[in-house]
Length: 249
Image (cartoon, rainbow, N blue to C red):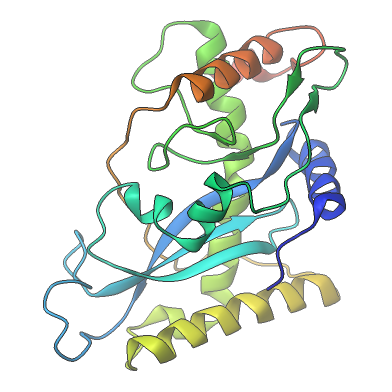
């Protein structure tokens, strides 16, 4: 699927803000294990921590549960955030090749300009363009509110994977094909998923879900920490707070 251009990214961010109250957000990131039979002469490369063989689907999802960027084929044995860093998606983000919009102030403010970001969980490294929760049990209210607001936005990708799993039953059992064909099937299902969403929507009730990846968290760089702190402060300000957030932490 084509990479969004700057105008499409801005539209995605506007929709995300309307749906989740998380500004300057270009999508929710996550990774999922897709169960496969053991590929021929593959050793333990595809054997994951849950004791079955899999390939990894990495995806960014918009506010309509559509996939905007996908990366398929990492080994199931991948156990840390390097899977994202070394994926095509991760490399293009770090190289500035995703055509992201220029930073802009958050709604209701004049400064400072804030970068556009993706929301993710602890599996992903913290950068200026990827926001993840504050670690551990936080006492500071602004950090707990940030974690709630980020979790609320991340639900988009969790729901998208649930819809994908429920709609395309090939994901309910091990895919018994060679890895290159497995990758094609996964990509085709993601494209068909988007087609169904755009054509007529999809009412769903979650049944089986594709298992989450349990990656070890990594420490984020200073730039990412600064951006995260600025979001946290904004969510506690009159311009950025939502009425019910203190009741959810």
